[in-house]
Each structure stands twice: as C-alpha cells, then as structure tokens.
Length: 290
Length: 168
Image 1 (cartoon, rainbow over the protein chains, first blue to last red):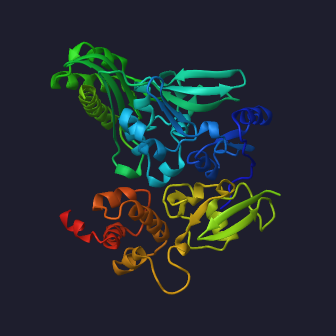
Image 2: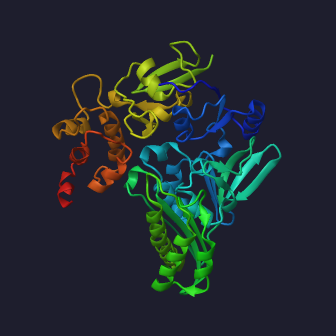
Image 3: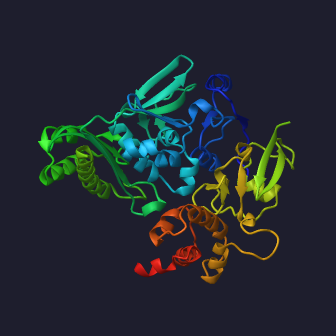
C-alpha cells in the first residue's frame, strides 16, 4: 500500500539537511525512525511535499558518554540502542529503562528516542525522567545551535519549541550528581500493547534519609509532560517516610490535570499519579543511596 | 538512475528508484515492495500503520515493521521474510514452523509469518526463554483469532523449554 507521493531527500551532512529544509520550506518533514511520521502519512493526516531522511548523516547517529559532560543521544539513535547501551545502563539506568519500556520490540528497533520527544505526545515514555534529570534538546538551525531544557521544550500535544528550519540533533543528559537517584514509573491498563495512561519520572538528591532536592515530572496527565513543583517543594528538606510519600502522592494528583479518554478516566489517572509518584520517589531515593 | 541493492532471503536484488511500474517509488513501503514488486506474498499487511505486527520481517537480523519502512531506506540491508526461514530446497521446516503446526498456534494464519519471525529473533538471542520473556518479545504481534496461548507454547516448544509453561 503506497503512501501519498513525496520527494525523498537523503542528505549526508547536517549542513546539507539544514539547507534542504530551508530550500524546500513548508510541507517538508524530517524522517528518523518513521514510526510516528509514516503512521500519520498512512492515515492521511500528513501529506509532506518533501521528506528529509536523517539516517545517512553520521553526526546525528550514535550515543556518546563522557564522564564529565554526560550523555549525548544522537537524533537517529534507536530506542533499542539506548535501552541496551552499556554506558546508558550503567550511568543512566532510568533512561535505559524508559527506552526499554517504550512500545514493543519492532518499534524499538526502528524508532528513535529523539523522535519520541519530537512527536511530543503527552504520554511519551522517554520524556518524564529525562525532563526530571535536566536533559536538554540540542537544536541546530540556520543561526547556529541552541539548547533548550526539556521542561521548556514541549508546548502542547504534538508541539515543541523547534522552529521551521531547525533540526533536533541530539539529547544531552547531564551526569547524575553523587547522592542523586532517578526513577521512571508508568502504568497502562492494557499492559505492553498500549501507550502509558500515566507515567512519572523523578530525580532526588538525598542527604542520608533527608531529601535535599527533588524534580518530579508527570506524563499523560496534562497537555505536556509537567513538573509537579508543589510536590517537589513538599518533599524538599523532609525524610521520605511512608507518610511523606503518601502526602507527596496526594499533592501530585492535585497538580495533575488529566483528561478522560479511551485509555483511562481522569479520576483513575489522578489516583495512579499518586501511586506512581510515591513509587518513583521511593525508588529514586534508594538509587541515590547506592 | 538511483539503484537500491537489497538482499532478500539471501538473494540480491537491484531495484531502480522511479515512478514506473517495475520501479520503487519513494512512497513504497518495504511491505509493498516485497509483495507487489518481488512477489513475496508471505509477508502480510494487516493494519498497515504499525499496530499489529503482521508485516514483521527481519532486517539485518532484527524484527522491524515492513509497513512502516520505506524501501528507499533499505539500500544495502539484508531482509529475511517467512519464505527465507527454511531452505528453498527440500522439505525442512524451521523448528518454529514445525512447533506452530504441532501446537495449532494459529487459526486463520494471517499473523503467523510476523509472529514466527519475531520469535526467531528472540530464540536467536535467547535460546531458552521463559513464558514471560516470550510474551514480552511478542507484545508487538497481535492475533485476532486469540491463538496467543498456543503461540507461547509453540515458541517454548521450539526452544525446548516447554516445561516452563507448567509453572504458570
């Protein structure tokens, strides 16, 4: 079943890709793994005039880890590469876990982590924990490179700060500081066969039993993955006792602004936000202790 | 003239990119090319938008959805379809194919090629999986005849770890 016709372009360098993007203008779309773009084209929601494939650009591929600078996940790095990369598993276990929990085997062999962020679904598995960890999008454009922290990257369902003419080249994840731990938690009523109904990413800094810093990001309960700032303030400076975790969960569910849809009702999403926030904080604190 | 060189089931094909009937248009998916250009109709197109897994083929050894793969992106790649699983000469079936028949792991059989190829990759990586690992690996392959229970049994049988099923 052929898709709607389009001009296919396969540049070898980022400069060439940016030039093609500028030349072709409106109606030009970028293709990495294709697991979102081709679905939209198959459904007829999107009829690109031109498609610029990014896979032939070596500079956009691969995963690099530097103990000082952190992790760089290239725009065309596959979800399976992220999930199975030894440095990601060793130094950023929640990043590897979130990639591993995304979709299924086939999609992880085709889709990219960067594409999961650019598609900007509120439920994107890879967004919450990366946002909590202070990861940033590295974006190239006609005027050079800029970096945008992920908590300012998403603008709405399917919308990001990426401007026409720009290309997300990599995702940069800072090194997790000593004494900090991370966690990703998610739930889907239909298990592996559907996207998350609620997902939570957390990073906490611990001083013994006391939480000195916390970043909590809720997914699929608002138009964009959202920081639960009141919940962060609530746990800061406190020992993460079962009582505090329960309070934090309640606070997070108050901050969440879910809708009801075919996947879950708003009330279910609020309750699961509470449960998953407690679990994420607990697991992140345990990871911080190790 | 842009040429694509694609190896399918061990045989090399040089395909021209273009708009003529025998050529590959950029809008052609690998599933379309396999079926309509190369005549390999063992690959099935179910939902045609990446939801069902019926069109799964192995690309460089790993399962991908051929309905969401552009053929123009397959230059230099090695594809295995269900036709390539057992050698064309003789009557040898892959142990997975044999096990699926022995366990009645299908009714209509439409999803079977994709399931068997996904399972093939699992057993290549993990020769003795437990039932949960099989279920996880096959979570991207859907069967509307509800043959999933027999499918898991068949994969475990092909791996020789059928006893794991009794622990459920």
